[in-house]
Amino acid sequence: MDKRMYIIAALIAVAVIAGIADFIQPRLGGGHVIAGLQVTEYSNASALAKVVSTMASYGIKPSTIFVSKEVVGQNCTLIRNLDSEGYEIAAFAYNVSPAGVLVPISSLTDVQQESIINGTKSALEACLGHPVYGFRSQGFSKNNYTNELVSQLGFRWDASFVTGVDPQASPVPYYSNTYGFYVVSIPGIIEAGRAYVLCDRACASTGKTAQQWREMVESAYLEDKVSGAPFITEFHPNFLVSNSTWWGNFTQLLGWMSQQNATYMTTWQLIENCTKPQLTCGG
Image: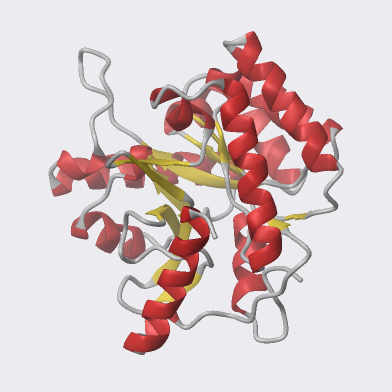
């Protein structure tokens, strides 16, 4: 059993022993994978369109698309079309300093957080003409006020959690009575005391090659196939289209995934499957 499987087993064991209501797990299956893929873009709409259409060409759809206020403001037609095609559009909140450096949401004042998060939600809803229920902050950054605000603004789920890093994270989505929303977590990886998530940019930031990233994603998929946990990973279009080696491994990964017979879902569909007694997260 590798490190990631230990994390899954440990989290479920803690939930059972502690008897914490927030962590009651749904029935899991094994042998079939339900995948909730995520695509995050806050600057390059053309890269977003290319990644989503390439995924679809391999039969990999729908997915959840996190977009910023800026992307939707300048590309509403694209975002509206993706929404009408069955993709789930979710709010991606981020902050950039005057020098162009990304600033963690958790380091901002309450007023600043509310301005950014509410502004992003409002922009998406103005474009789509219906409520937006999903949220994630840049870098998975959050504090107590962020969690309170997400609930107050009417988000149904928050994907700003990382297994192995956040105590509240779980391999399986669940409803948190504490937070008032569904917690959705991305796999965390801990190496040499450093934690990062299972996505392209994070792996690259630790020195992983594109091939190593692809193999890590494939391995995680196969582990989830055995455990029955849903498979979640994240793609960053602007990063992928900017490097031919990473793009080549991305399309190679899509080709491999297209042969695995997974069921692809939006995050909200994944939540419904993982929290309804008659359904499973895989099997």
